[in-house]
Length: 354
Image (cartoon, rainbow, N blue to C red):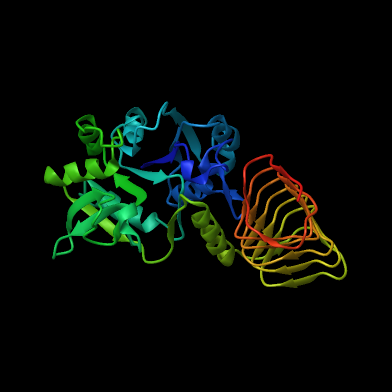
């Protein structure tokens, strides 16, 4: 069985964070969100993985993952020159898949549950496809599945104005090569894209069986800044603490803390976990790092208070301010300011003097 990760798209809802690179490389708990997808496939026993790339700075994907060796997998890159839909992207992998069953992961989907059991069930089944469903509060923003009274899938539709159910089709699909024939006959939607929901619906209409599994724990489509911040919180809550840095006297630490190599926590710093701090960081003095905060490698943070935020690699924040519910991109620099609450969504390389 093989795997596909979709790593394209423009990430318009996440600008300016995505002006300089793909959204799937944005970090959650100091790891690119698409790496969680790759690990889920690897943990399910899948080592042959195709990554669909396209859009802004897609070369950064290849630079990060390489041939997959350091992640314990083998990666094939498949370019998608323009965003023409999930089905179009899947169809580009026809030669890679050949006659095997396969799993498709949208690169911005975070799931906590191991998918090995789903993979094993699907391999033994006669389903033409299986999907993961999750109850959501805003079903009109997702592909939706409607069920028959016997629990089988009745219909699959894309972002209906009046959803008949709240069962969202998540961005994780278990497929067979039958899908390629269907995609070859698909017509573009009003968005001029080949929709995966239309392909699944066509499978149904042609009397193929589609199975499903219900996700009852955590799943998140990280399409907005708030989604990313929430996913960061959930991942941090599950991490086991470790400390590989240096801690000076006069530091207060409560809750789970993860600290990378060569990082220094300076005197007068207070940390209330869960918090993750990367490698080669200097935190403090006189700094408060509050819960659900990620700080990337090579960052310098002092004299400020940060909570529920993501600070990416190479940032310098030396300012008497409070930062909350914010995402600050790589290599940003915030200098001295007054002590007022501020919310930031800063693109890569931003410089602010307040």
